[in-house]
Length: 218
Image 1: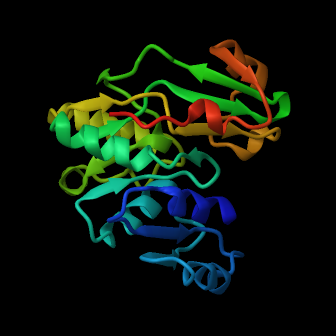
Image 2: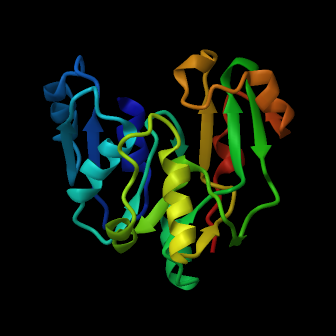
Image 3: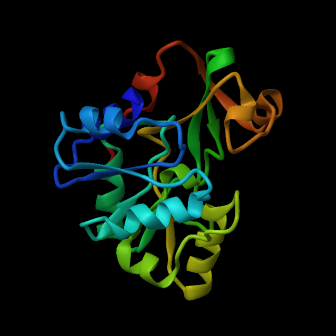
């Protein structure tokens, strides 16, 4: 819970709101709403556990007030310049879908900060990482998230964007970290740690990755 609110509060982008969708039946919505009351523009909803990710995303986006939607994963790290950079790039490149293809990954068991697909920055791409997905709301009005698939809703959404001719832009690697816990089964992406690390480049062994990933990008 704390990570969700810290990521939101940390963002320097001022005109923001956060919509939290709880999709486990055993989660205490009152506890979350009590925490949310300490912050500005935060709403908390709860949907049945049987809802798949796509349906949860559509539910939340439908209730969004603003014209830009940013998808945050609850267990990753979003630096203070994250929203600011992506929104600025969206405007300067006049692109409706944006995110990160290359990104930092922190493997908690190994205390290793690594770079995944490091060369694919500041360019148009066909794919971006789901945890960094940002798009204009009008795009979603034409392409909804798949509500039947258990996995791959981001991939299907991006595929729909490409078919519609919406450009997809990959921003810098900075200000976001995909955090990999020791329990691989707790992630949507089940790739074993060693196999995942083999596809990455080591940046630093550290217990504090924030100084290495934080950068104000123009």
